[in-house]
Amino acid sequence: MKLALFDFDGTISNQDSFLGFMKAARPFRFFWACLLLSPQIALFLLRRYPNQRLKEAFLTSLFSGCTIEETDQWAELYCREKVGTIIRPKALLEIEGYKKEGTRIVVVTASPRRFLEPWCSRMGMEILGSELELDNSGKLTGKLVGKNCRGEEKVRRIEEYLRLSDYDTISVYGDTDGDLAMLELASDGRGFYKPFRE
Image (cartoon, rainbow, N blue to C red; front, side):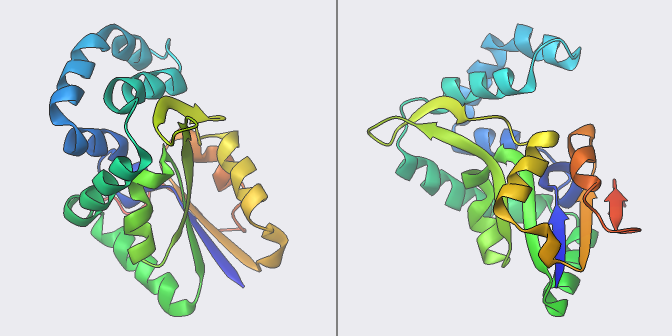
């Protein structure tokens, strides 16, 4: 059996889906959140503010108190109307080639899984990603469950979800330092860093 693992943001897409989802779902709140969180954004760009804390700050500002049903509706709309416009054509061709071969395809992303799940499902792909925390009434808290899905956390979730020894060939695609640990899972010659660039 064959397995292909794809990062999404910057690998399959040419834009960040987390930012794209927030702008599409709640544009006015996103604008104000950017203003309010500008000091944290600046520190993050200087690598002095943790990725997960900034992500949770945005989630709290935009979605805390929203129901999971509302979030899923926004995700369905975003995936139907926006995601197709940010997909790299060469990535799409690669994915279609794997599908024809019967390769199992799993997207492994730091973006919240639910934001991209409708698109992945329509494409016949599975998805692992950061998980949104819900309170007892099914509303978003603004926090993530566990760690942000990047770096070693990507590998941990892959190994928890899949038995890698079942696969004769593992192809891995990524484009940032958050994908390097996942790229080490690739079979010889099957790790692709910053692919599909035009």
